Image (cartoon, rainbow, N blue to C red; front, side, top):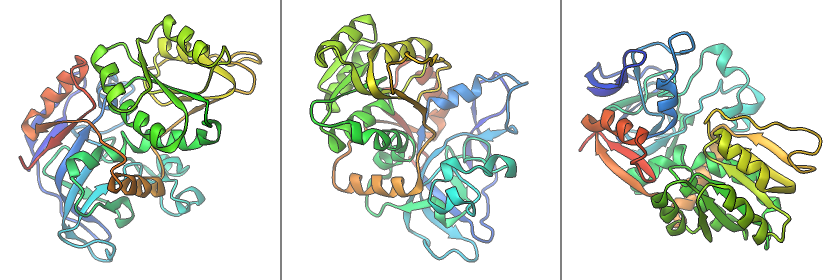
Length: 346
């Protein structure tokens, strides 16, 4: 089969031929129908050899959707022909966190060498994908896999973050979304569907600000000091009740700290490498600063239900598998709007 693989540190990925895997006991083989491409892959491919934690070659792609091609023994939840999406942050399956469906926070996964597809084990940017357990697939029925596959990360990650702040997003509140890209534009839609907050989107690119407005943002502003004044004006000087930073760079974290009000939430979702100093009075009193890693299995099931209700409209750009390396070039150049999705079967 054909697959997009990262083969050598510092070199761009290539499309290569690899063997089709066979499912063992408890495993599921998917014929991939869609694979989302994430900016975090660029971060992974930017690590040097001394810091690189995975074995190469690595088939990329941690957002996967597919049709069940075959199953191993003791698989009962799905059967051949079912259309599913893949829950990415795999855990041990037996600890307390995993029992609650919070495999994204499994404390045993790293020690056991359990890693997500595309981030340590073969991923979805291929014609076939091997999934380790039936608990890691969610049936989607007749939903379009191309529009649905981004929910596995670009939807799940903001959904997880937003749910934790919902109690603060009352009528009259303001929520700020920094970065209106693949995750951010979905986060805007979720905020509009789940809360009564006024949503303010920030992005350096005009086209991304336009996407933010189409996604439901009440305001879309350049990511600069002027945005701080606007947020303060909108809140009568009090500051935002929640700031979701989908970039995580130093400049955006600085903006987040300046926009947040007292007893607010700052959720650092992006992995841009910035830091946020926390002292007794900065950020403002009672501000909760947190990070997010993906989301839970129950939350992914909830997202699929929201998709069935027509709440979400993920903006996708379609590519063929052979164009996989080109997608990363476009992403690095800032040319992707919303989420890039590779369709291996044409």
